Length: 617
Image (tube, rainbow, N blue to C red):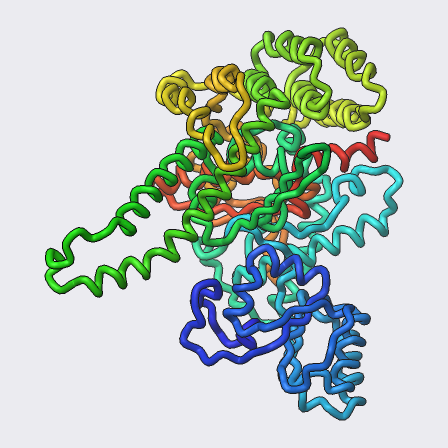
């Protein structure tokens, strides 16, 4: 699109101009398309594509009659009217019109008629449906940024029309992502929930697309991916759990949105906000986001040492140029060529050092190690007494939300004695300003799920730490503090040693979460238990390529290489990382698997608490 819809599938927009002649142009966006682009490209990337200016369609824009304009906007009547007015006023030289999703027949006719009336239709060179109505932050992670799906689907006051309208919005985003992937999937879904409604609507939409485009009717399953639609209640506890995977921690403790980390803090009585951009070529994030926090600290320290050694090597004076055998100029040129890359690398290291330091300070201030430990040993009855100790004795009012989250995980994953529940609720009640309405909803939900005999109960119990992992990582933890000690932004406070010693027990056992077990069973049935197979055999099966006759039938147990897992009601980074870990482990065994994870919205635990608070009230 940025190259005027020239086929550039294999080009890299973030590194070069791909040897193509630059055509300078203006990019016109609306709020939705801005979020689509901003998650993957920065201003410098747009400049490399010849975009000298980008602006919002509703803003006051000065005419640039000698410059072509690319429009990338939602297909709405308001946007079409704005585009038509720009054409009428000759605001730009030529017009390349791109819509985020499919332009309806009525709006297409409206656009054609309006442009024809201007008498300047020759200035419109392209009109494209781009099928990009979703947000991608990583190659295997996407969001539709459709809010309040879970709360609306679970609110008894939501009308049937509202449910259908919301489902249509979700289906549109899913349809766009499927078309972008270039193949028609097999659809598997739970029955009886919102995911079934969305699966049925998406199946119909895709079958209409197959008919209208005469899409290949090949039945080669090895070339088709499976789209697995799940309801959020499949594992609600995952939305509240504490994790210390680097990416999960950043999203939990700070704000991670559209590849930007926002850290809010208070300095000298004033609130400050720092933002760090995660570039798609951020080498440290790409290799450490999925690792435990201490591993990331260790790797940051290693990267910093490597940088210092490389910088010293490049900048050391040459004692005797005669020893270079006439290669003086080559040596200097090599140094000049490497310095910009080395400087950029140092900036990335510094950024992550600052983020890691801020994370460590938050871990200590909120005592998050206690919550990690409790959630790692849910099956141990001692976890209850440990939770009460933390609730009663730490006196920290800054982590009330973390305490509520851990209690919700305990409540969902185990059958707690009523006197224990009563005591915890009394403790929370002492903090009058703290909202525990999410807990009221969770209690009602568990009662409902128990009546349905749902597999969610007792499915989230995590194993305790693996002793071998503890032994192998003891040296890592003992040096964690010193590696972050002398950073530019300040020093770690005294007493961090107790935190580190507590963290030693928290290396999680590598264990599949419920959603990963489901995905494994559907993608790789030969490596699954009969109990798991019985559950997924009951999942509905849709094949949008079957145009005639019944399109929903009892599924055949089939192996898939690729899947898209979409959770209706909200996703989280913890499930995403668990799925990727499983896929990597299968690939390392020679059984290549690829899993893309998506949802209507990727939540932080704090934001999801707010989502369900409205239902609890």
